[in-house]
Image (cartoon, rainbow, N blue to C red; front, top):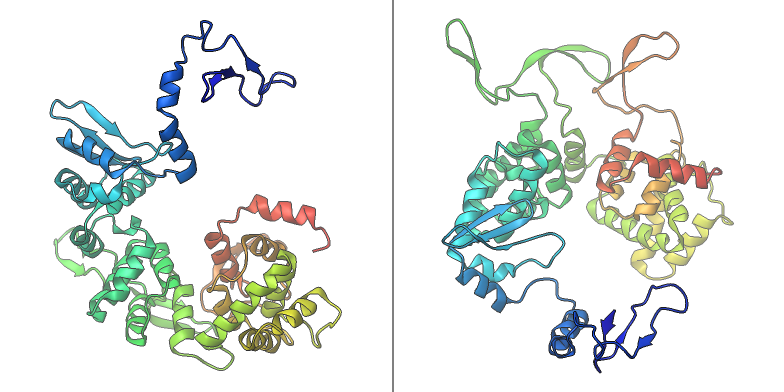
Length: 437
């Protein structure tokens, strides 16, 4: 039962047919004591404001009033908890309710102290998920000085959002120190370093090669101490030496190649050491813009256009196909779109161009549905990746474990799985709904 602006009670929408929305004259006037018309009228302005303005955070005045009663603040995974001088809870942020105004919170000394403490504390007693949530909540409420210190030397800086990490490193004047910070983050969490690279840092050749040269070989994660003598036999960061096999099958002795971050290094090499067949950054952007426009015709057409870029269209274009029809329409829009379509056609001829496909994929031009459709498609050929990194796989015919090279573009597919957050069940569902591909 709800009460309208005139004090009349009526039943809410959603009741059985014939009951919903009907008025009852015996409402607020005849014993419906739990609803007060005066209270309803008094709160109407606030309720209308919440509906029309779509309040997502609490007002600054309310936040200041709560902070005035606060003597201590703790920051956890759900946000800030405010305590008074007696240890009673004044307010506790909850994901299901609007949070306090973060601009007002940042100016409070108790909040700044709590954020600084959370960013400097190792948080060893928490799970990884709770540490991530706590660090992100503290980082949101921290000031510029504490944010900079957290990025430079925080024990849990790998949980800071990659957008903030990339922006901080990109703005720094000391390029050498910024590049070394990226290297340190790589050894703390390679996925975080890869996310920073996808967001546009390093943005110059010097920083890119500092990262490539530092991470291309395996290094000691910590000091190695001889248990008998107590002498340090290898320092943290020293190369790990051993025998390894290169991509041509030759056995070599020396620093072991590092498989972690191989895709990020390949991307940076294509950007700052281009070879034949690798498009420039400008060309990759033009192709990505054209692919986004092609996606307006649906995810299947967009996925097919990207598949042809990866594995080729087998020869001359099929002028009656959906992909070619969409390309012709996009090419008519502007000179930039025409340039992008021509590049797509150029790299899609024959067996496709894997490097061009990687450069375009890093721009994230596909919609999520198109990415699912592409991953559901079978690879266009059985070629293996031109790499020295192998994987242990069981031979189905002999039953023995063997070192095999991954399939061509397999790392790009894995990257799309992670970036678009695609589950295997979604790929299977797409295949079931589209058995013809």
